[in-house]
Amino acid sequence: FLRVATVARDFIIQAIGNEELDLAKSALKVIQKLPSNTRIPDDYFLRVATVARDFIIQAIGNKELDLAKSALKVIQKLPSNTRIPDDFFTPLPTD
Picture 1 (cartoon, rainbow, N blue to C red):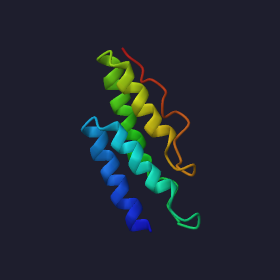
Picture 2: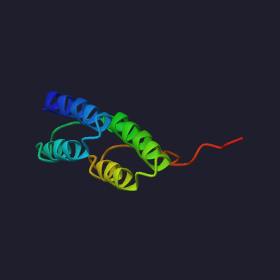
Picture 3: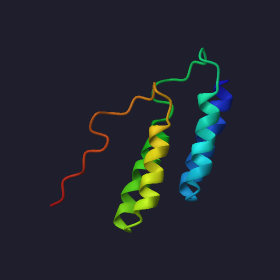
Picture 4: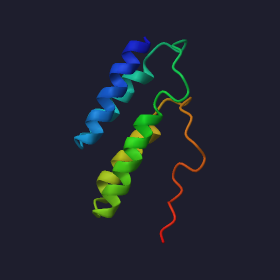
């Protein structure tokens, strides 16, 4: 089932890039339906979280708050074992 997770992960990243956030959320539902004994590494979906975070930052900058909220929902639907660093959403210092 790791192959299914791989295809879904790549699809989710592409969907976020194309602003098709409902498709990304639907693909995450597929991941959630995988058997509970499917071994997916903790950092396997970190790239999805990174792409979604960057999308959120861009959407907020463009004052597209509904898009930002939708992308945040994508992050919230990531598998529960997805390891996201503590400082993942900490803003970068501006000089």
